[in-house]
Image (cartoon, rainbow, N blue to C red; front, side, top):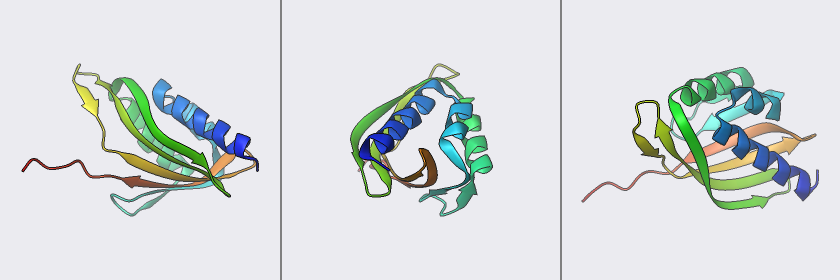
Length: 123
């Protein structure tokens, strides 16, 4: 895998989020993909991860990815970002910071480890 391939997959991953397109996300995952989240420490299959994303996307009118860091790695890419946008009820949202460590094989994501940062609490 080349750095260019990994970064192209990362760009399409962001595109899927911004378009709120669960089908594009599904196309990026290998059939045996595993999606793990730090907030619940549960591994999801491709189908479970896509269903979770589809349900989340259905609550949004718009979404954008505020990318703060992106680099290729030996096995894929590492990306830091925050999702921002508008919910269907018109309320704006600004999600917690996220770090995604993605393993890519043959141009598809085979594993994502997603680390969710905590929003600071008011003193």
